[in-house]
Amino acid sequence: MKITDARVIVCCPGRNFVTLKIETEDGVTGLGDATLNGRELAVVSYLEDHVLPCLIGRDARCIEDTWQYLYRGAYWRRGPVTMAAISAVDVALWDIKAKCAGMPLYQLLGGRSRGGALVYGHANGRTLDEALAAVAQFKAEGFRAIRVQCGLPDIEKVYGVANGDGPYEPAKKGLPPEEQWSTPDYLRFVPQVFAKVRAEFGNGPLLLHDVHHRLSPNEAARLGQDLEPYRLFWMEDPTPAENQAGFRLIRQRTTTPLAVGEIFNTVWDCKQLIEEQLIDYIRATILHAGGVTHMRTIAALAGLHQVRTGMHGATDLSPVTLGAQVHFDTWVPNFGIQELMLHEPVTGEVFSCDYRFEDGYLVTGDKPGHGVEIDEAKAADYPYEPAYLPVNRLTDGTLWDW
Ligand code: KDG
Ligand code: MG
Image 1: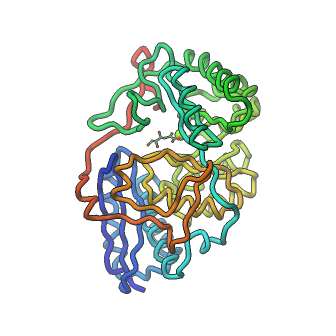
Image 2: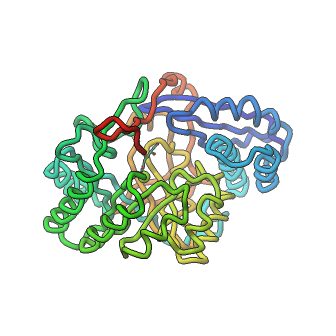
Image 3: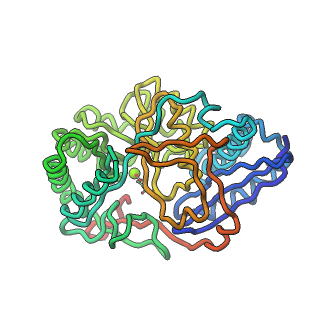
């Protein structure tokens, strides 16, 4: 079954998405997501200039061989641009294979392991009162697990907190905006936030928090200890993870569970973290870590070491990724949780999905494939708009991790 056409669709229904559509000689099509927030066009070029010419004429059924061809065959392995491109091809081919088999993707992977994927939503507020109101809202909507982010009293813009009344969205149109950071203020304030959330909502909701790579291992250990009374589901990205051994310092000193990996591209980024059981949840995604094919490798290694999945699901992962991930979550034996940051309604004008939110879970439908389709004519109504993630500075102006 030869691949006869492959094209990249770039659109901005609410935010930028890069979508790959592959067509086969018998008319079956598959979709993959190649969105790399703030660096979208680099992946477009990688696909259009270097990958797509090699795909035409290949057998769409040979998913593993195509993965190896694009990974080993590039010589320049790994990295977010390469792996997002490989992922898009891989997911599109799994979509095609499942459609040809007449099965939803989770059946092809090994079948249902659970009714639905437990998801967590994003409650945030500029003030503690706003954050508490947001938690109440998520609870009322049926979320069982809630990530809580709150503005700091003396800092103007903080990660994870919406500026106005709309939902939080990390990418901003135009050049990178600048945000501020103060580690001492943060370390003092966050435990107060969770004390208040537990006092108000009790022990029922599963609570999560994203540190977003900003602390040293020692500071992260301090925060983990201070949060222990509030029994978090996880503390995410406490420190930048390039130095995997650094997590030993955190792990030895706190029982607060750790989740890491949304920016990882391959199993090599998390091998030590998993093998030494330095984390509890691996957040690598189908989108940025090489598709369904490579996420199976990561999840299998994680499963050997009691690490569970907790895949990234921010708005910069398109509905195509979320659709594929819900199938993966439905099957994978060592599933933990799935992030769910809802796309704007306008995104739904371009992408149609076969998953739904039900009582705190994401549930897949039974359409063959991953169940997500794109309306290309509608996509053309929303052209690409340059946007960047913010950069972060300490209050004295020093550039910091965002
Ligand atoms: O593109 C960056 C976002 O995806 C990231 O900031 C979101 O950290 C994030 C999360 O946990 O969703
Ligand atoms: Mg995160």
